[in-house]
Amino acid sequence: MLVDFATVLVFIVLGAVTVALMLGISRLLRPRNPTPVKLDTYECGEIPIGSAWVQFNIRFYVVALIFLIFDVEVALLYPWAVVFKKLGLLAFVEAFIFIVILLAGLAYLWKEGDLDWVRTLQETPAAKEGK
Amino acid sequence: MTGPADVIFYVLAALTVGSAIFVATLPNIIYAAVALLFTFCGVAGLYVLVSADFLAATQVLVYVGGILVLIMFAVFLSNRISSVKLSNPVHFRLPAAAICLTLFGVLAYTAISPAFVLKQEITYQPTTARIGELLMTRYLLPFEVASVLLLAALIGAALLSRPDRPDIPRPDMEEPK
Image (tube, rainbow over all chains, first blue to last red; front, side):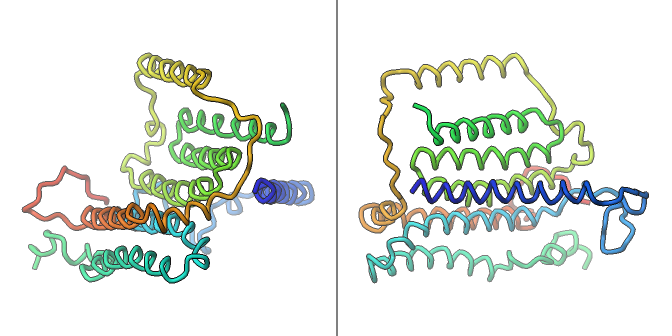
């Protein structure tokens, strides 16, 4: 088992060394002639306005939360996937129940419109009063 | 006994503790979040060294892939993000030092107490298949209950994101501009 993880370690170290080496060599070889335009943040050719340090929409956080829940689901399904072939139909049914419970939650969110990105623009109380 | 595993342990421990110090001390909260990435990875490596391979994979999957994203978004959402210098202020140095020293004492005492017996021969065996078998047979009910728990968390996350309803009181939150 430790040998498998030694492979992972070698992979990480080689990856880090490769990146460092490539950046180091290009730093040695390239001409260095910075101008303000070159040092500007690249934003698809547009001139960037303001700082990137702005407050993000709260809805990103909710998407991250939902992602995390399914992330944990995947973590719990790993041991199942390892023994799936050995245990056969029983394991299939057990994991099926596990997934269906969570899928029901996802279907509920979908039906209630919690996954719609523009929902808050339409349903805020202020918007309703505006009508 | 010193071997390659010991060297790797000390490198990983240094990585974990060093980046944890950066998390606590860096004034810029986004840099602190990036330092946390290295702490989580170091802990995953330490799990591998104590033959907990499934835990290591889960650590990378859930903490590095999930919790850190969540923390990053929490940082991005903070409405004082533009005042970077204020984002990681230092408060209560003395009480914090007292608590940390006490905790260190307890941990050090536990570590050297005879309750822990050092195994000379560590056998590294894959644990995931064994965990899977137990989850599918003996611990099936906790496995399915975990699904219900995740369902509750899912619905809770959705409820948090719903627009304010006048009949449910909520703590005041500043509207993003």
